[in-house]
Image (cartoon, rainbow, N blue to C red; front, side):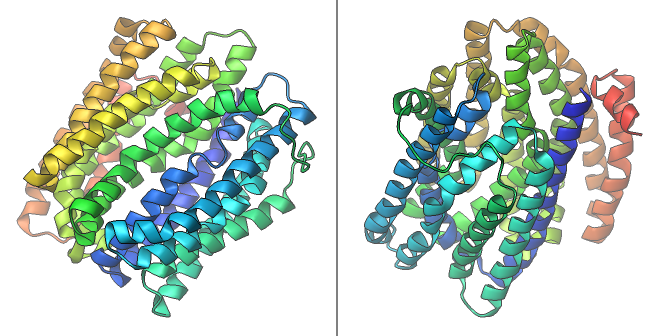
Length: 473
C-alpha cells in the first residue's frame, strides 16, 4: 500500500503539474487568439487525435497488463507500433488536402502535416513509457511530462507572439513531442528492446484492436463536437463549445488523471495476486467520486465567473454550455475506472462495444440537436452520459459480477456531499456574485468556504475518503 501511495503521489504531481501549466497556457492563448483561430485548430487536431488512437494499438496497455513480460513481447510491441504509427503518419499527409477541402478551411492541410510528426516518434515514446508505468517509475515520468509541458507552453506562446496564429498551437505540440522523446531516451528503462519484430503480432493486435477502439470512442466523446460542428457550423461555434467542454474537462481531469495512470497496474496487480477486483474497483470509484462530483457541482454553478477570470470576456458565451456539460461529466465519473477494470480482466472486447454504443448515442444526439442550438447539443451530452452510466452498470453486472445494489448504496454519501456543496455554491452565487462583487472576490469566497464544507461533509457522511484526508493532514 505504501508503494501504491507513493505512485499515486508522483502520478498526481505529474498530472496536476501538467494541468497547472496547461491552465496557464490556456489563459494566455485564450487572450492572444480569437475563437475562430482556436476553433480552426480544434477541428484539425480533433481529426488527427482520433487517428492517433490507433498508432500504438494498445501495445502500451498490453505490456502493463501482461503477467510475464519477455523480450519477445517487448520487441513485438515495438514492431507493431512502428508499423501502424508510421503508416498512419504517412496517411495524414495523403488525406490532408482532402480534409482541408471537406471543411473548406485551407489552413487545415498544413496543420495536419505539422501534427503528423508525432506519429513518427510515437513508438519510441509509448513503449518505454509503458515499461516505466509497469515498473511504477512515476517519479521519472513526472520529470518527463513536466519538461514536455513547459516546452509546449514556452514554444507556443513565443510562436503566437511571432504571429504564427493557429500554426503556433500545432508547432508547440510538435516541439513538445520532440522534447518528450529526448527525455524518454535519458530515462530509458533497462528492459527496453529497440529491435522490432512481429512475432506476437496477432496476440497484441487481438488485445490492441479492442483497446484502441475503446480509447477511440472514449476520446471521440470530446472530439466529436469539434468535427461535427466544424462541418455544419462555423469555427467560432467550434471554439465556443470546445471552450465550455474544455473547461469542464480541465476541472474533472485535473483531479481524475492524477490517479488514473496508477489504476490499471493496480487492478492488474490485484488480479495477479488473487484479490477481489470488484471490491477494489468499488472502493476506488467511491473515493474518486467523493473528490470529483462535488467539484463538478460547484463548477457547473460558477462556470460564468470562472470562464471570465481564466479566459476573458470574449468567451462568455461558453459558460452556459459548461454548466450543462458538467452534469455529463458527473455521470461519466461514476464509472471512470470501468475501462481499467475490464482491461485488467481481459474484457477489452466488451469495453470496445460498450464505448462504441455510448459514442454512437452522443454522435447522433449532436447531429439531431445542433439545429436547435449549442445549448441543445450540451443537453445531448447529458442524455448520452446517462445512457453511458446505465450501460456501463449493466456491463459490469453481466461480465464482472458487480453487485449493482451494493455499488449504488455505497455512493449515497457522495450523492449527499455533492448536493450540499452545490447548494452552498448556489447560495454564494446568488449573494456574493449577484451583488456586483468582482469575479476574483466571488471565486475567492467559493474557494475558501467550499473546501471547509467538503471536509466537514466527508466527516459527517463517514465517507471512505475521510480516512485518507485525515491521514494526509
